[in-house]
Length: 252
Image (tube, rainbow, N blue to C red):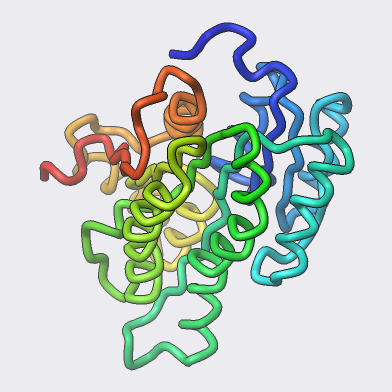
């Protein structure tokens, strides 16, 4: 899928790195020799990542909804490693509730995590990456293409990323490639937490899997493999695109 040692000593920023898909991407890139600034809300998980890969991962706790916190990640990449080659934006928030039941704060909070944080980080990172090139992968959602009951803020915030990725690919090519990964139901803490709203969460997850042509939920490993492909030179003619990784969800 990518050349051996391709990521050795490359420098990446990963948000949402303490849980689910972002955590798996951090593991995979560190295993391949990358140097990583990992950001996330779970301090314990972040410290564990750092302890597992002490020569490869620097964990920085912070609120990605804050402009300065995002800019600090870029500053730390330059301070610790002297360059920046890749950015993976994996943090996400559901924002459940029908439109007339959502507070203004809930709506803004969902967009702040899913959309605004992408702007905050990339406005600082992209000009630096333009010096020598690089690649960016944003983890979006199948919700950009398919409506889910009582998820207007989530669907809208993820849908906005499609237009943003196309625009950024146009504005920052040819040196920087920017792509979007759109997973369906992946077994992560976020999905499991949403299932807890039902009386039988395990049954709900199994029913969800059974509706897919592949009859299983996605895994963080499934998504991380696609992210690393898009970061790698094997995808050197891919930019401004979205990759739907959904177990066949959209075909049902």
